[in-house]
Amino acid sequence: MHAPEQQVLEHAIAWLQAGHRVHLCNVVKTWGSSPRLPGAMLAVREDGQLLGSVSGGCIEDDLIERAREGRLPAVNGLLEYGVSRDEAQRYGIPCGGQLQIFVEQVQAATQLLPVLESLQQRKLLRRSVRLGSGEAVLGEAMPGAVASLEDGWFHHYFGPQWRLLIIGANQLGAMLASMAQALEFHVLLCDPREEIRAQWQVEGVQWCDGMPDDVVLETAADSYTAIVAVTHDPKLDDMALLEALRSEAFYVGALGSRLNQEKRRERLRMFDLNEEEISRLHGPVGLQIGSRTPAEIAVSILAEIIQIRSQQRDAARTSKSIAHALSAGGVCAS
Image (cartoon, rainbow, N blue to C red; front, side, top):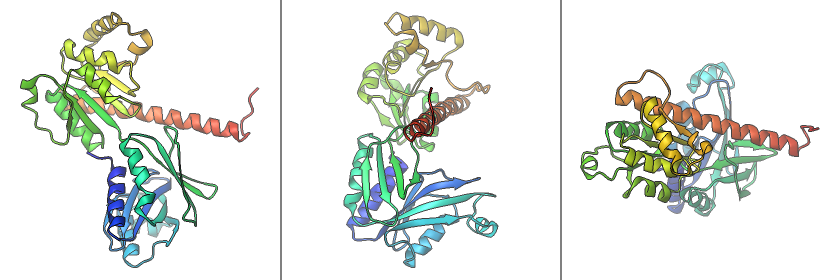
């Protein structure tokens, strides 16, 4: 499964190479209630074909109509929706919501190919476009950065797709895989037990051959990766956790009761893991919502993963804001 951004770029590049006129539309800013966050993106070509989303509602219909009538910017520009009550109702925006969208006509596929390559290589990238000009600049990006308009430049940040590596192809693993894909995670699965693998029925999952610890190393788990061990077999779960807790994965969890988790932590201490590394383990895994069934447990695990991801992104943005203020002389330190 490709990330939505990657799918949009792939289609935009293919359309451009086929000779179509293509516009990229990006959410820059929202006010009040809005269905999509800054950075949401779609591509639309001159005949109205579209991929992606900026609102999930009638704004897409308006962009299609503008594209067909040739009313989208020849270079780039800003569109605002939901400014008035009537417009909010017309475009299906929640009460009080407003969106600002940066619309850019892409002149050639070569402008987007480096961005697609960066996504495929799981790198962070900033693409900055000067408002009213065709000038575009690529640069490095910091984790947690969000799309913004600053000093006449629109900055769009492209990052790796979120991944979930599941150790265990049991019923819970299947539920996790299905739900995680609906949440736009790229799901990887490892289970060396052939009899378990033979029963697997969830499509769209990337199978990883080998023992769990080797798979974690080969996956090169980064800060966009979550790892959850659910086999209930210490020989498999603990092997994965040994490497996962040393990795850059933003979330590491393991199924098991509190008593089993304490025993697991004691075993992990025997393998030269320090207390800081062991403290990263989420176990018992998932938010405490009284879950009992595999589906309910999967919901609790994914809810905790989303919570941790949001907390880390917010912390990264706060750190970036403080650093920006300091560099601009906006904060005095004694």
